[in-house]
Image 1 (cartoon, rainbow, N blue to C red):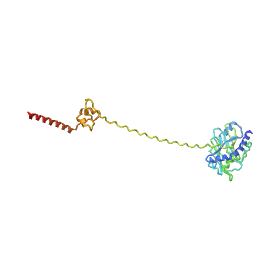
Image 2: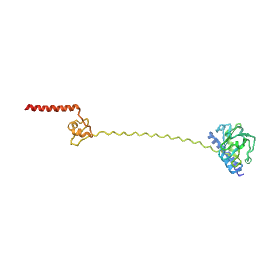
Image 3: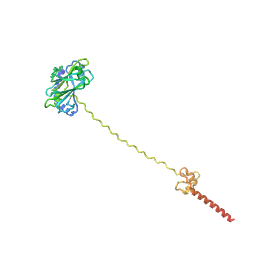
Image 4: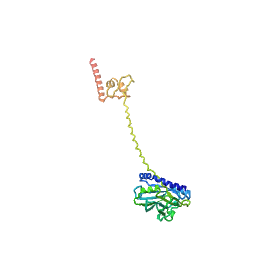
Length: 301
């Protein structure tokens, strides 16, 4: 009784927050709005915990989006978990928003549901649940129900003048409630659940962080190294004063300072070698001078 009283009080308090929830839904129209469930039968604590932790419903428009002006609503019931359990019966307690069921789709060959005649949600009388629409799993019931990793979707037309926005408002106020019967728990027990009136906030899509563009590091330009040049050679070995300037020191380098310029200056400078014609002229001049001297001596005698 304490748990039931808390649930009813919670529904009343949440009615005041409908406008706030509607604003949040408008800001997240691209994402499904999800609701969890609370146990109402309390047959087994372990089964109760399993159902509340892995059974959910997503409420969207027909295409899976959140167009608040849509005139159809899709309820997708999912068993998200690993613990044995099977959703076998679905119930809607509706005041004025749902018109009729259009279609039933599911996750595969292991799931099969059909619209059923009016039935009673087990334990529904404890929360004043009045069934307006019922969908049952086909035989064999537990095998064709929504087991771990499976889902079933029910598409409704809405009453004239009603939109998806009205569906969300009624879910959060308690005017529209969803319930289901769950069987085939690991201990073979069964439980019943009713949706929580507060939607589970969708996880925001993370904003991608741009990859920083690395700053190019300039390639260092090598500093040119000067090529070492020749050093002017000065020969002091024989006391000569000849300096060889390669192309410009004829007096000291070739004539007056042969020893220092041409011989001793090879280390630092460039040795000057007379051209062949110059050598011939020097030899010829010497011979002529020598012959002339000899002939003068003979005349004197």
